[in-house]
Image (cartoon, rainbow, N blue to C red; front, side):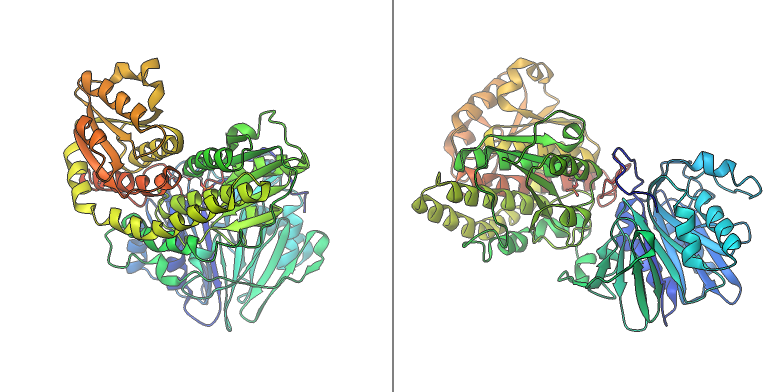
Length: 612
Ligand code: M6R
């Protein structure tokens, strides 16, 4: 196979699932797709191999459209593949949905990624009949051509084909001549194999495997695998056999169910008291197995989206407690910028999924420059976890909703712990203060619980403002991040116009937006900047804006200037981002529900952004 370091690659964000074993495959494939649907929901499809050969069903739109078709036309077979698509090449149509078949309909392929040289490859396959406008279909025909040339050898046919392919891919292949064999391959896109008894599985991520197995083997870059009901063989570049111990995943399968909640997002918001408690447990003594490098001069945090907001909290906390300068960079900017990385710069890559393309690229850049790297991620076996020098695993468990909620508070918790331990390691945080902060950490789970008890009140505020208002979220210091995060939650699931802004920046322009149709959410818990926030609130009120403040319980000053207060329990300023974000998650959630939005699957988005 080609070298796998291909900087600058684009990737699609699809989900793949595969099964081979003794059970009917269709239900397993559909169950897996349901758990992967957050990776893309433009179209979906399945292929099963049975006595009639390969049978395919596909449908544009959400998975429910495919399920509907399969009700009247179920497919049988004990081996098969499924795919859920986030379109890049080719429109959202049935013919562009995966799986794609070879001309003789004996080889079927599902693919997550991009085939950069597909046009050139297609030229060389002129005798083949193409039936879609996708880059993926070229793989089915290319593998068919190699298979014929080799006179068989389903695995070698795949590796031979991939030698000619430029791009990134995770793929699953079935071949009608081999009714017990799935072939898988990965370059730059995630793929995990699940190990069962007399059955084995394949999926883009662990979530799809959980109902069946917690023993997984992640495929690494450039590897191919032969998967049959009795075992799995993995091969590295040059066809060298690879031995890898399976990982045992602690996540529970029921995390992939809504557990009585209307949406995953609501369930995940409510899980935060437990996930914050899980983050606190056993963290007094150190940062799990992480050994912080000495002699550091600075820290660079690389992240995207919500994770970047947690990165901003990391910056404020590390600068306060460890007295180290921190750059919290958007990974998409860092990867093409000239930020100096070196041996004395600790690079912290923050990513829930551990698969975000830009964050991985920034990490690789830092590593190449000799910077020690630390990943903070939720997913064991993810690319980020494997490539970083050290890993701090979040303890949020599986998150299904596209909008990050519990993984945000977990990221913030880990960022704070990192700051705390850096402070201790550098001698800038006295022991007495360290112990005091630890006490504050232990109070957080109960405090999150208290915020969650206010759901009904927040729902009322959300319903009142969901129609007819634009939103401006403002904050300072630790809660600048909360303002950004609150606004992101609102826009991504309700599609309402919401901006996050530094409160001190309002006079530099955004104040012009203030009128009776602007709802301003001021994140103003007790801390170094409360009084500054109070002035900013007054300036907005004086211009006819409506202000809903997130403030510390009993804070009369903030209450006296805001139209409405959403209270959070008293805590150290440093901990307030964990508490203050919860009412904002609920506000966005209830606004979106009252507008009838698809909360768990917002339009145009996918949970794992493996496209740059
Ligand atoms: O998996 P990551 O933490 O790297 O994901 C980063 C962003 O794509 C993610 O946080 C995104 O912004 C969320 N959907 C926001 O809710």
